[in-house]
Amino acid sequence: MSHQIFDELLKRYVTDEGLVDYRGFITDSVQLTEYIDLLSNNAPNDSNWSEDDQIAYWINLYNAATIDLVLQYYPVASIKDIGSSIQVPFVNTPWDIQFIEIAGERYDLNNIEHNILRKKWVEPRIHFAINCASLSCPKLRREAYEGELLQRQLDEQAREFVNDDFRNDITTTGASLSKLFDWFEGDFRKKMPLRAFINQYSEVKISEEVEISYKEYNWKLNDVN
Image (tube, rainbow, N blue to C red; front, top):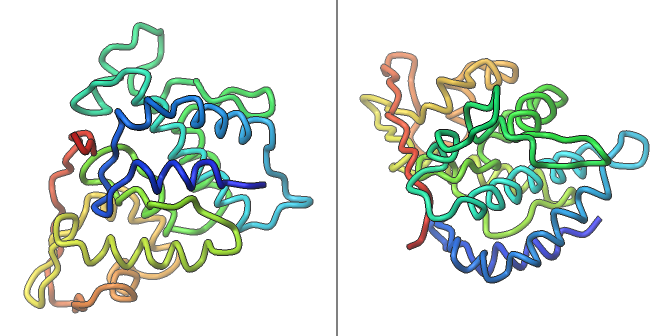
């Protein structure tokens, strides 16, 4: 299926720094809704979708739905503020809101991240592609993910994230890493030891002697305004 609508929106409303023009997205909310409806009516399957096409689909859905969720409550200082304003039983965070409908079933963002992307595929680079609308998250890519481009896109996301000194401060004497590497260390270890994984992409290599610590996560909205 085509991700062209989302691709055009991302190019229009996301900066090179990964900041999002949410006010701009509001003006094109009809297009965003059209794209999410397209995803809703074209759920992937194992029989005639490649693995990379499926992963691209779910990453794009996560990112588009996150933007859509923020727009429903905008302006907010943080996506986490949305959770505190929800008056629905058993819904404590924005990631628990079941507002996404795919093939007649309702999903929340946690379903997509933890029960589909993380559970179905051993692909830790997914963590550099999905965006939680916060400053410490990996940058929202200024193009949609495509199955035929996915491996290159994920590699580029991993390399940029690891070497971004706002998110990871890596030197020859110490490494202060994103909390993503702490929270999801098990996902990275399914491929290889964490240091080895980071060293695939880091311009400065982390030796076994270097102590690793983790940065405080900044949940401020990744808003251009």
